[in-house]
Image (cartoon, rainbow, N blue to C red):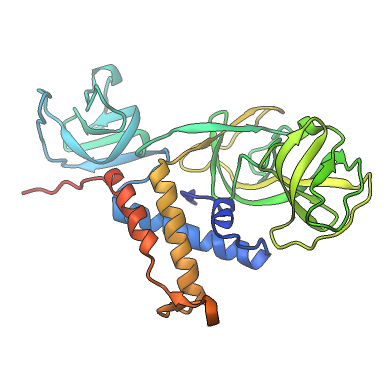
Length: 336
């Protein structure tokens, strides 16, 4: 089972203007995966919802402040309880105490006793979401890994997306014909930034479009005219003819039924949301990934770059990002 990243490949590319070659895209995925997993190891928690059953054998009994019944401290964050058993007997969920009840989720204590307890639920620090468009076409099976969406600007590689009750991890984005065409003739000039669209409502600010072999970033839309950044992602500036097809990376390659959910079929135009980790965690993930990228590029030497652009690889900004994210670390409990 894969795990989502705490920042997307697109966010990392935007932070440092890294190019979008196939080699670099795979490298950035690997680096972001490593940075995300390192955050989990350092902060003792994960920042996405994971559905699973966790077995506790001979859990220690504790009675925290303001909780009168017997129970024990959980060794992870519980977002929602969906089932529980005590020595093989199902517990009545309405009778199970969770703490801190007035502030959670997440919950760190549960009012269950027994020699073997199975707690089923969604685990993690947070499950905040944001709108991420809709399906462009129905998903008619539970095994396919290609999903077409309406807006590629809202979803990045590494994101955890939710359609109905199924979560999916985005592992790649491929080009899809938008069904729209150019209505003007952009020249091969970086200052020629207006492109005519058949229907401006079919695109979004922040979306990267492909015309012939040139990528362009849409920075504004007015009616059926788009303002773009030309030769984006290291692509080659070129002239284009009216009626040229416009593509966008709206075909997602995904891991189905991710993080404990079940793959299902979904209707056309079904709403998509995406998991949103806490902002400081996103910033720290980007900072660590940038540090890893530059150090790897320099062969893990003390100097990054050459000639006049050479500089010491100190990672000063990484320490600041770490301090901002530190309040989101989970304090681990130990028996004394």
